[in-house]
Image (tube, rainbow, N blue to C red; front, side, top):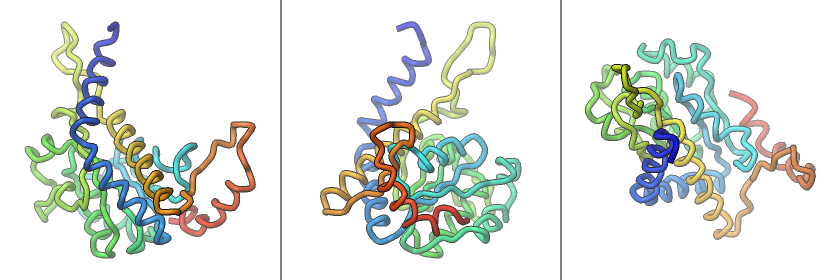
Length: 235
């Protein structure tokens, strides 16, 4: 193999496939239950974790029933208490929804407070985090809680402390993080299982078909979009 990074990624994906399948299924069940009750997926990631949050939203081959909480600070204030509560004041969260929170460390107040608010409302919570690494970190929230402790289901990234995995001769620091690829693998596997579950229950999943394929039935996509527009196009 030419790329040491790809070798590491393949090892990580194999580990995730072996260790996380039960958690992926549990998360998929929550998503299926939510959508069948009229709920949606609400995603959030602070800083670089925004990439994982965006993966589920407006995604070809994904589900229409998803929106993202946008952090205008792009993670600058994620260590400050009150930021998560401020964001949730601008977002409609319903008890039938599923909140999906992505944070490699799981220690910062913004994500923790969003989880607390979602739990207060009664929405289910799926947390994507580096579980073992997070357990060894100190929470930056006054409650002492870390994100995984507020979850109904945890999807473990199996990333190392600091995320980076590649050593380069002549450089003290490691490079090349794995958490983004792990996040996408976990969340897309969750969507796959949720979709299969809905079909098995006789429910048609709200799949978003790419507008860039000639066979795309545009009318069907527009009908589904109208059904969810009042939720996904407003905070």
